[in-house]
Image 1 (cartoon, rainbow, N blue to C red):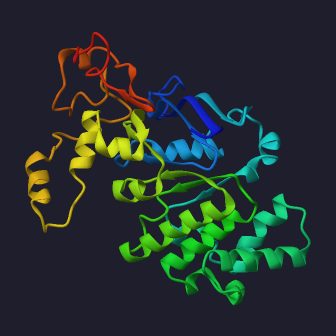
Image 2: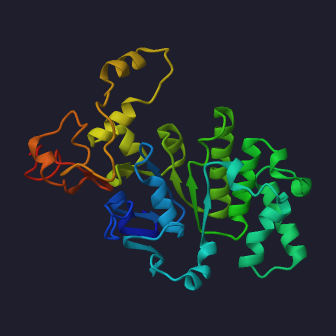
Image 3: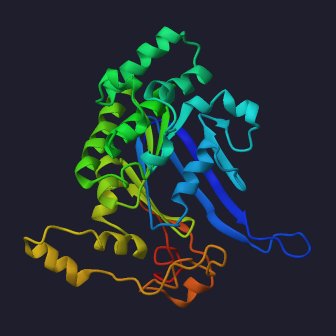
Length: 333
């Protein structure tokens, strides 16, 4: 892997539940529970999982929109988690985020020039004329015409709005861009255009991405490595081709088996026969199961899975899985 740009160690984010009569929290929602990963310079790490698994919370903790309960987030050796607001301002421009909903993430009362210009005013020492020229350059870079500067967000389609959001994120020359479900609100025909734009910008500007999505097909196309999350924990991590060729965790296998394929060959019929349909609902993160958090829905669960947390095992170079089936002396031993 390339030189590490970002490293996340033991990341936890707990939200307190309504306080009781003594003024103490009645419990905690364990949105993220001990996540570890790193991202190399110029790499794209995909983060996948069901809705509510904590993947978006991870992105918000990295950028500082959410305070970290426990663990560290560091960028090239500089610890970002726990920084005071004044300290964080100096490095805020290094990490930018593209949000899921382009209809909500842009200020409807400002025109496009004002939207893209604002982060440059705060973070860059540029004159007004330089900022105007940079805004026009960014619009051209994301495939929009520079005369759009005077228009407002409501005058654009969803795909165009997301391009504007991408231009805003790039305005301050970030090194890491967090794309949080950045194409899920767009039409399928537009999704591929925006994904290709992300790839072109990465090649041109040397960007590093954390690409968060529930769509495995999208993540497969854009990511170098993929991390799979379930109920706040990372259950598997591998290079993209390795993960699709040799999924190890039962949850990863169930996700891959659910990917639709064109119904034109025997391959789809085989996939239907081998499809893994999980039983039951996702447990509440306020009251997660003991042991392995997936054991209540896992078709391969053993007695030990409900009693002990599984270890993280490297099954191949760069391929790790957190499951008793692969722990030495565990259920699969």
